[in-house]
Length: 206
Image (cartoon, rainbow, N blue to C red; front, top):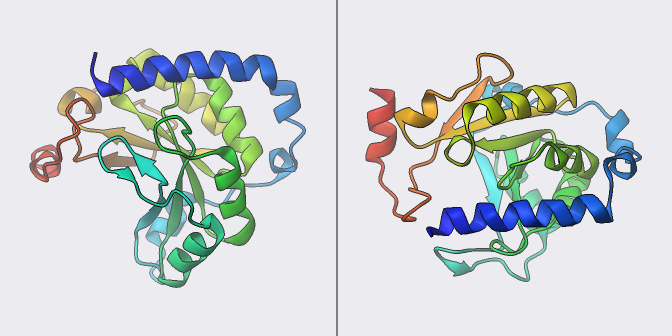
């Protein structure tokens, strides 16, 4: 089993548990459900920003501990002051040390779009993202079939969330939903081997 397969399996089990602990009807009580999101697409196009989505990640399977005890408030504000167009907050706890609280703190102290970066496999996670204050979510083509991606993209739009669609191969690109996705990002890291190659971007663009 690859690390990606392990993470996805763990994530499905985690989501099942979270549904029991906090049903969607409770998530919908969040004030963020009545708050209009900030457009990730528009901010990426703004000429007064640098076009970078700055990431807050406490640790990773490939690099170990990174910002384990760091203040998401201080780091995210620093990113904004440096000109970042948006923030990407890792919310996976088991493998990346993140949390929904990290995302909510980033939202509270910044005016820019905030992306929930996680391994989204269920619509429930979209409701979580909205309740925490996310403006956008990451959908990873490599971990879902096209039908699931289409369904999740539609639900995200219905909730007022923009979608960043992550691809690593032409096979991933073939899964791109016809509606609901306006931003596509290339991940140069192979999620199975964790190796990085810039050739991935060059090949997909050519």
